[in-house]
Length: 188
Length: 383
Image 1 (cartoon, rainbow over the protein chains, first blue to last red):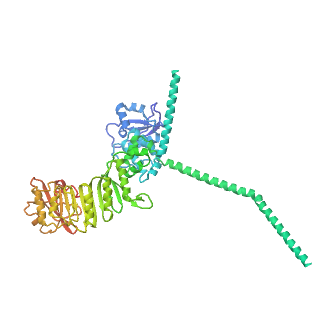
Image 2 (tube, helix red, strand yellow; image 1 turned 45 degrees about the vertical axis):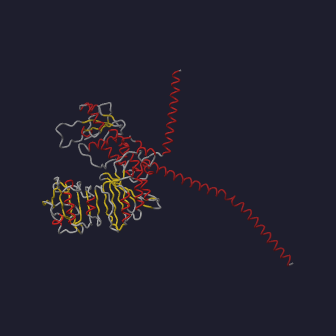
């Protein structure tokens, strides 16, 4: 149901190639929307698949785009990597109009990818996928000790937290002093 | 001449010894001097190998560290909603461990959770978190080598500390306590003291054991506050009556040889009564049934199970002067129904079905009222 192509958010994207529709297509033609991530690759997604994302669903409902308008104005998600957006789009397509299973085994195994996916899914407000991802994150520390959890989840120690806090305070103090000096200079 | 010869020999020897001594002295100074470049080279090589080894070791360490870094997940860099979602998904034991990772984690973890806590005192004290079908368990075994499930100190103290930690973090409370007296033998007082120090009251108490001292079982009953259900599967050596609160909602006594009609009539507030191994006669059972039908006692009764000492005259004696009509057999797992049920009606119109079952080596009569039955089928399990 989705396809990708090179394009930009400002210019109208070229016609994306669409995957074959399912045999039991509804009589009313399904509307499609376009999204792109940091890599500007445009993904064509059906409105049904986008229903998973509360953010995009809200945008669609408010905009009331026609097919042409939607094509001309793909939703830009500059904060999401292209491959991550592709993953999200694929998941939305796979679970379009279906009840979500209790577990999803197709989530990325690499923690870096999973981190980006959680950020994206949280931003796009896809509740079910966020739940799956968070379950996988929680599984990382199953049966681990506090020290191991600190290591796996990169949690700073209390000493590191205190040092960071001191540093932040120092920086804030310096910035405030700089601003005061600048204001005094302006006044002169 | 001979003397001269000897003198000459001595002089010669003397001279040779001196020569040897001087050679040796010179050699000891000269050898290190001659070999110093070689030794320096050896030491230099040794230093290079050593440095190379440390470099190699540190680079391997760096490599491993960088691999680990890739293998890690910066949880606290996520948005708060996502962090909360992850924490909500955590197993309660992992959740407690997370709270111990740092002060910031502790602040994040102080959220009320819906778990009920079960404490089981078996060979080792065990703590279960339960929520619907979910359960997670923790236990403490005394060991010199501390680790998962192992504690160097007193297991009871370790359990108490863990529970109080869980309570302060998640607001969980003890709901169920099971004391296996045979396995946790001789420590009844310690267990009771521990329980009293961590919870005022809980819902369900289960006591198990064989050949236990009457005073130990009674000590538990007297010193713990349980509000809903009591299951006594403990057999005492004395087989004397136990003092049981009359306001208990569900009461199950499996080794009830001491139970009399008066006892049963005194537990008239109960909703569920299950007795086994009693010596109650069918005449006494008849009195209980009639008392219920005439609404003289046990008005809340929903399920009443009692063993039969005489199966043959149950209908003739236990149901004497009680109008009934035959109903369908009510099937229960682990019980074999002997025949159909006897449907009786209370004064206020509430109906009950009495069924006789073969259970183990004896027979039980069970009376169910409507909360347990729907269209002649059991809709709830006997606790």
